[in-house]
Image 1 (cartoon, helix red, strand yellow):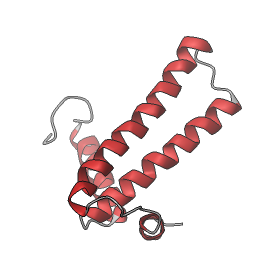
Image 2 (tube, helix red, strand yellow):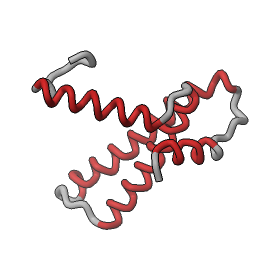
Image 3 (cartoon, one colour):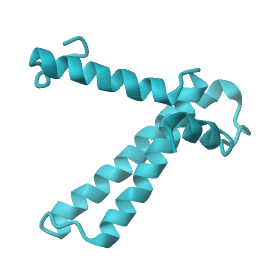
Image 4 (cartoon, one colour):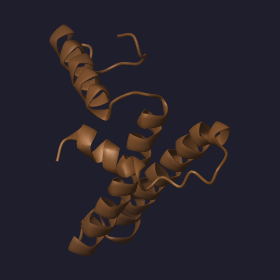
Length: 110
C-alpha cells in the first residue's frame, strides 16, 4: 500500500462529530499522545527488560506506530497535504543534509 492510498482510507475513519475548527488541534494533540505511547513502551523496554524487545512488546509498539501513522495521515489531509509528498520531501531533505554533512546538529534550516 502506498502512502496516499493509506491516507485516503484513514480519512474515512475520522469521526467528524467534532467541530471542524477543532480538527487541527484534535489531530495534533492525538499525534502527540500516540507518539508518547510509543515512547512509554520503549522506555519500559529499558526500565523493565534491560533493553531486550520481546515479540509482545514489538507487537504493542507496532500497534502504537499504526496509531501515529493514522493521526499523521489525517492531519496531513486536514492541511490538504498528500502524505506521499510529506514522505518524499522529508527523504529529499535528509538526503541533502547527508550530502552536505549536516545530519548532526540543530535547526530546521541546516
